[in-house]
Amino acid sequence: MQVVALIREENGVYRALFPDFPGCTTAADNPNSIIAKATEALSHHIARMMADGRELPRVRSLAWFAADPTFLADSDSLMIVLVSYAPAPREVRVEVTLDESLLARIDSAAEAAGSNAAPLTFPRCSATSPFHPAASAGECLQS
Image 1 (cartoon, helix red, strand yellow):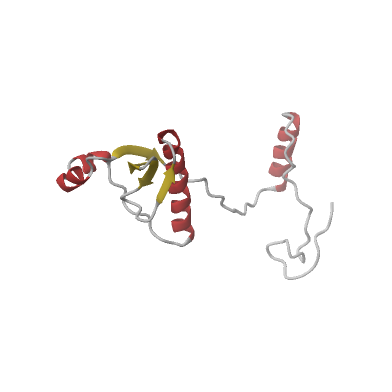
Image 2 (cartoon, helix red, strand yellow; image 1 turned 135 degrees about the vertical axis):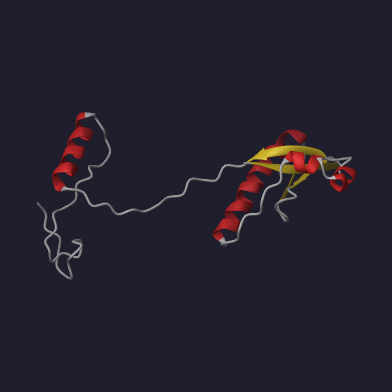
């Protein structure tokens, strides 16, 4: 996603703000570093919004801003840039049930390929083990 950022220089300080993300601003002392700082500020701002459970705003395109006469009249002294944003990958926890022989074949194939990843095998569990889906109490039995 690309987000429009507005950059204004005042007394040697470059300030960036995002019209679609009110409150997201940053500053730098030179034009070369303001884009990197704006990218970082946007990333942190969006991460905070998501952590707070807030909905992200609909991002307007550069063409939208270019067609807005009020924006054009107010942006004479601004630099307009597009800042890229890519959301961080989210981890998802899953539980998978596999046939024991399939799991053993996967481990064998990984070992044959020289994988240094931990094997996927787990200790065998009795029906009374808390690790067994039908269990209510007990301990996992090592094979």
